[in-house]
Length: 187
Image 1 (tube, rainbow, N blue to C red):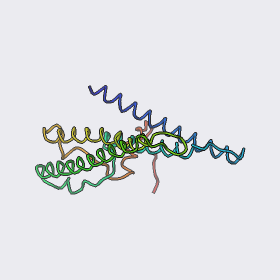
Image 2 (cartoon, helix red, strand yellow):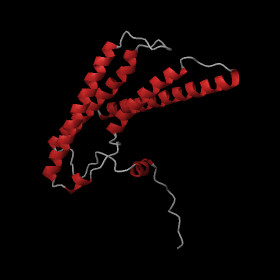
Image 3 (cartoon, rainbow, N blue to C red):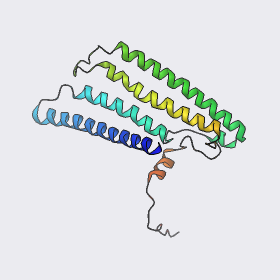
Image 4 (spheres, rainbow, N blue to C red):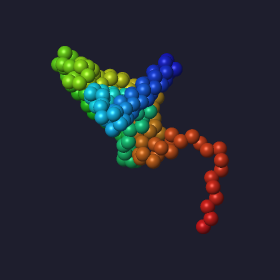
């Protein structure tokens, strides 16, 4: 099961990379066409906006899976274990509520705009609002999974990082370990 989930998130990362590549090609191609040939792609701006929207929401799902969102858990680290567990569950309950609002609002807007076409591309605006569903449903499942882990004791709130304290910490974790020794600094 873990391998299937890992494969799904790998496919999601590949999709995000393809969306980013599509955005770059659309915007850069349109700039070149405008300056070099005094023409352009009429739907470039609209399509790149839709790609950016989907890239953002899918990227948020990946970040949620990897606990890569920025946050502060200093108070949580100083609490007794039982209180920290209750605080984590309360925070996750609030996240569930906010995610449910996102899902229900996106679903409503998707249904309302299903037969509305975007002006330049003609793509259904339901596809535009469906990005909220593409974020909300996996996010809801991830939050429920983390809540279940905290309730059952599979996740120890004292040692688990639910958020990253800073962008620098996140960048350091993503760098591969260097096989070379650290350079000597003379004082």
